[in-house]
Length: 316
Image 1 (cartoon, rainbow, N blue to C red):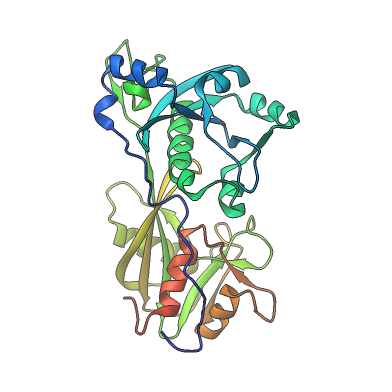
Image 2 (tube, rainbow, N blue to C red; image 1 turned 90 degrees about the vertical axis):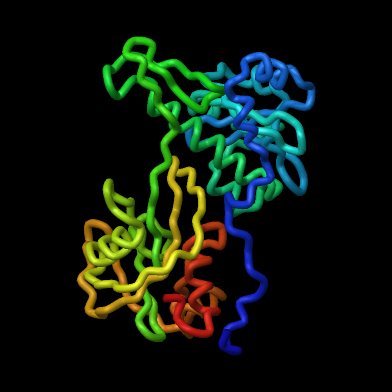
């Protein structure tokens, strides 16, 4: 790592390194699930669309409620089994977003979104991965109440890890959408973009969904070419991150840029440009002369960029 880049202690990548044992073998056992739900140690997260309900605390809030307490908060939709947390059963329950909104009036509760929980450090870090699990799984149920084959209402089975169609017998499994997120590199410069929804002055990696029949490498090359007009060669995998907005898996990569002339797709990006190492380091440290910043450390883009800054050579 060049001596001029002292970025400090590496932050933890959000929603990763779960300590929860998913205990998948218990999902098919109704008697075991009933016993888990009756366990006095059992806790559940309460999710209403984009909202997560927390019990206010200091310095951290608590997202894990006793099942009876959670049941009294609002009418529940699905209840899913997330696994075992330190041996204790952990569930997630869905309530209507309107019901979650109504809970904001209670003095003992904090109702906010999962992004804010992660970026604000509002709960213990060990809760972020299972909260992502709960939010993504419950979002899938909310979008898959009917059979995609025959249109009939489906039924939740296997503790929330499958939905079955009673009419045609089709089994539906939870879906995760793969997304490539990449940093194109050319010598001592990298390519960053920004979307209109980004905070003012914030820049990040380019990203896009992997299409059917496409490899990760081809998706990286296609998306970079489509969004910024930059052709890429070698692609190196970095690491991945669950991204429960609503149910994606971010696949982080570095890519070798073969061209440098930009042709920005303004329907996808507000802008894209090349940045040199010194400028990116200043952005990461929030010392940029124009107030530009890189994405928050909770997101994998921050870590992809930092890995390039700290690399002795090129990551690709």
